Length: 106
Length: 484
Image (cartoon, rainbow over all chains, first blue to last red; front, side, top):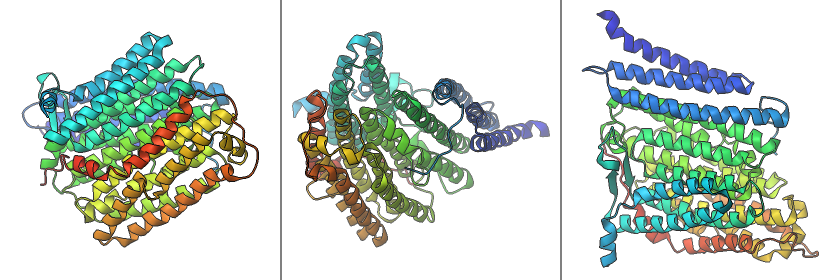
């Protein structure tokens, strides 16, 4: 029984952990593919938190967070597709799949 | 008026999303006629936005469950005073951008992509203003981001592509933080509607964390200093109609969302500390944006840095929210005045750039003297940005200073006035080349519409100088927080 009660908490914790890991990679990594993956890891973290929320309520599983996750996945796929295309264009235009270090602002 | 009663029964709100979306689709299906679909859509959307604003003004906020499905399964559209004012501002500026783009994109083979993306962006912004729950706001926010990133990348070339990529990554980061906030709110209260959340949110850990995540995420999107680094290259390197849409409209979207959240969902949370922090960041933005605008060598960069500065004023919202119950209305009026003036400046800059073939300030003198209508538009709209009398910017800053003084926050009044001086300095720098002696040169031939549209918008900023009262009475029809 104790394990059943704990499960949603584990999902919540892992979700937050994934979110933070993704955030870290997004800031630290320089290759654009890694940055795009990092955003996806952050997204998975949020989805896992939503799953934990769905399982955590009383009276069975709440379907609304599941609907949110499905919509969220659609949004994430579209955003990833745009980001990947843009990355290829940046590579073609500059020769590097990374953002140039932001120089002095002028 | 009898026709008003007939209008009251009509559901106008969905059309503000359907029309631009249909326009985008038609522009994609008939690329050769894309510009005419765009123009038709822009005209119809403006009519709808006007009617909706009149309706809301006469009958108060309207709530519509799409297809008769109640939340959380259905999608609810909410049109209140704040939403309809933003929709109206978007529609007016949107029509001007569309007209200007007719000339700006004439003869460009890939012009239809602009129309598809621009109408899509318009639909997404309208949907966002009408959204009544935090999750739909997330979805529409992502739509806005994807459309605007694609529009920035449309210019091609290394600089716009890198700017678009940076913009996309910052925006996605912001969206993820926002979505995490949505998850936390749903976990804590089990509802998503703005009003329903506002009625329940009380001081505890989960909503506090959600508020911080959502606000910080949206701050990055609205480019508040020091999270502004992505904005000047993205807004400065895009084609002129896109720059105008981004600076005048898209920046306001994330500001609107922050305002909506703090007005409706989080009024029960204390702002102590946050208001001072935001005020300091706002002051930093006004100062830094102004200084960078004084140094930037190119016309469009100056205008882009001016956006960084003006975003600062928007975030005086937080000190005002805490100190003065009506304070946010002054900030919204400022957002509208800035939207119109900034669009006029960017469109005028685009016209000068096209005529001269470049936008290096130092070498623009001859074309500015040759294109007097456009230089005049630049001057009037610039006066609107500074807040000189007889412009909407003056009324906006008057309201801001008045609110600050009524609330006893004289330091923020000083920020507004000091920022006005800086704005004056960079606007005079923009106009400076026109007053130097030398030959006048009309530059390359341009369609007349590219000169008339910035002028019309600039004159509208003067019109806004007299629109303070109707705008504020429309804003009085806003659904505010549920207390709690």
